[in-house]
Image 1 (cartoon, rainbow, N blue to C red):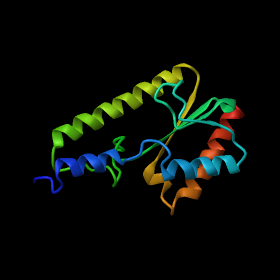
Image 2: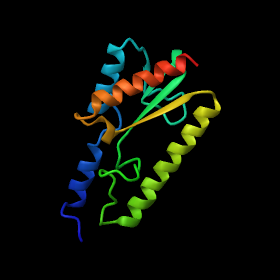
Image 3: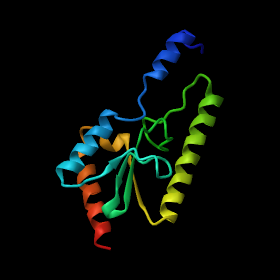
Length: 142
């Protein structure tokens, strides 16, 4: 099946997809801030450039889009029917890069939490965030 958009239109669409300051990231940060957490955002000093770094708790949080980071078993992760080889390779490299970053962080004593787009839908946002806050606080007590 051929792409319905021209090359220029597709380029513009892809260019507009944000990698930082997404609505989900902002909502997660607001929630954590309202719970009293202080953090750094998108800190390039750490492997994988975590979306949120909580130095006091030695915790990093990645907020991943299900499609872009290959969330297996998720309804939002479906390989496109066009240019399949490209997408399989691209997403495979992203998944491997994520794994490498997590390993490097854990080897340096960091706790790594990954929040997925599907967990942060309006219906499940509050529960996910309550669990995340409890998990972070639990790390402080260990």
